[in-house]
Amino acid sequence: MSNLRIMKKTQVLVIHGGNTFKNEKDYLKYLRTRKISLEKRVRWYPVWLESALGKKFDVIAPRMPLQDNAKYRDWEILFRRYVFLLKGRFILIGSSLGGIFLAKYLSENKLPKKALSVYIICPPFNNSLPKDDLVGGFNLRPDLFLIEKNCRNLYLLFSENDDVVPVSNAEKYRKKLPGANLKIYKGKNGHFYVPKFPEIIKLIKSDLEKV
Image (tube, rainbow, N blue to C red; front, side):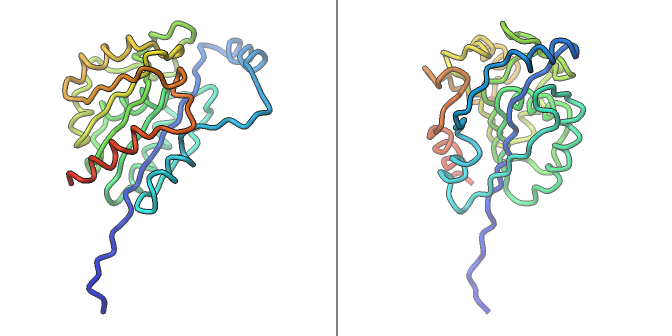
C-alpha cells in the first residue's frame, strides 16, 4: 500500500451577477432594449479562473435561477444545496449581484464549515445603484458581523472606474466589515469586465500557503 497522501482539490464556488426588476413591465423593457452582440463574451470566470488556478482546484460555477430577473429566495434555495456539497477546503466568490447575495447569505446563515476565503467583488450596497433598481429581496441586514465568522479570510474588491457599482460602495462595506481586506483597483474595465484577473489568483494561493 502506498504511503503517499492524496490531496483533495480546493473547491471554488463562484456566484455570478444578475439583474433585478421592480415589476414585469421594467423587466420586459430591459429585454427589448438591452445591448446585444454576436461577439463571444469573455469573462475571467469560470474558464480562465479554473485554468489559472490549476489542477489542485475545482471551480464550480452554477447558473443561478432567473439570472435576468433574480429573486433572493430562489438563489438561496439553490446555493444552500451547493453549500452542503462542499466537503473539504473551499473558497466562495461572488461578483456583482452574486457579491451582495453572498454578503446577505453569510450574514444570516452559519456555514456548516468555515470557508478558507470569501471574495465579494464589486457588490452593490443595498439599493445604491445609479442606473438600476436592486430589489428581489437582496437587501442587507444592518449587522453583517457573521460574514467574518464564516471564513478565515474576507476580501472586498472594487474598481475605481466601475460605472455599474460605484466605488463609493466600498466605504459602506468597510464600515460594516472592518476586518475585511479591502482592495480598490484603478481600473478593471469598468464592472470587472476583464478576460483575466491575475490578482485574485495571487490572493487565493497566498491564503493557501498560510494554511
